[in-house]
Length: 115
Image 1: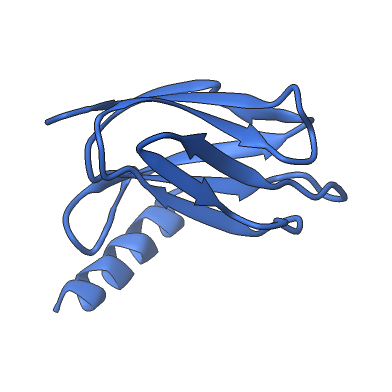
Image 2: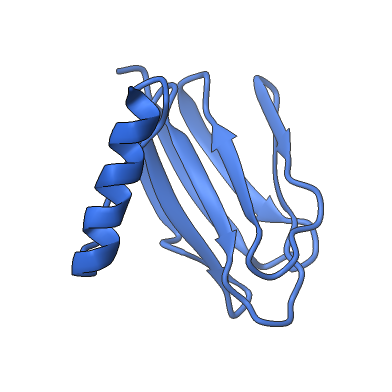
């Protein structure tokens, strides 16, 4: 049932050209972030614990590699080819730096609220 609803909703939004904030299967929001021109866009987010940040490599010819290395949470996307997405679910509250392992000046700050 949920999958059918999501497919129908995506078709409606695609047909109208509307921008949509996605909802994950467990009901948490999915926040879209672009990697383009050696920068994260937006460069900062405030989300709730358990929500997802989906990072898309929007560059046509650059690899990216998103990672988080904090004492209470780690994540590593591996190399992301152009067009690839990495989904990061933040299970704990705090402020986290999402960095690019290839472009050291790239930084996304994610503040995760407890709910």
